[in-house]
Length: 124
Image (cartoon, rainbow, N blue to C red):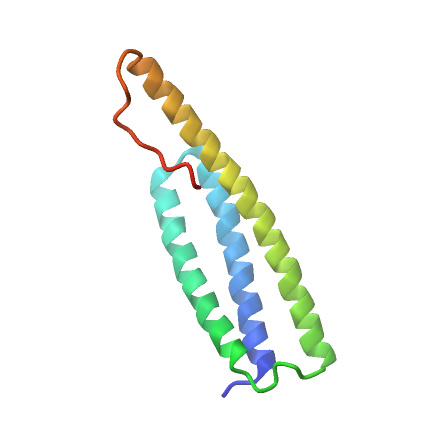
């Protein structure tokens, strides 16, 4: 079984990759680049799966409660990176909702007398 420090280092690396990909996602949302958005979404899904596997491995680590300065620093770095990722994802969620609202408005202008056949999931 791998050491807790190694698992935390790997988690931090994956989280930093997720931050970078989420920032790229934000750019694609702003530029409305659907092709790039699809690619970014696939990368995010892969990174999320890797992170879930690392979390599972971390939960099985016998060193989980070990007091170590380096491990504490890694945990703090993880928490900070997660907060950064949450902020980026909140902005991305707002951009997505804004884009969907715009699309719905355009559709209503194009089909003012008809109900739009496009249904949009409000949970984004």
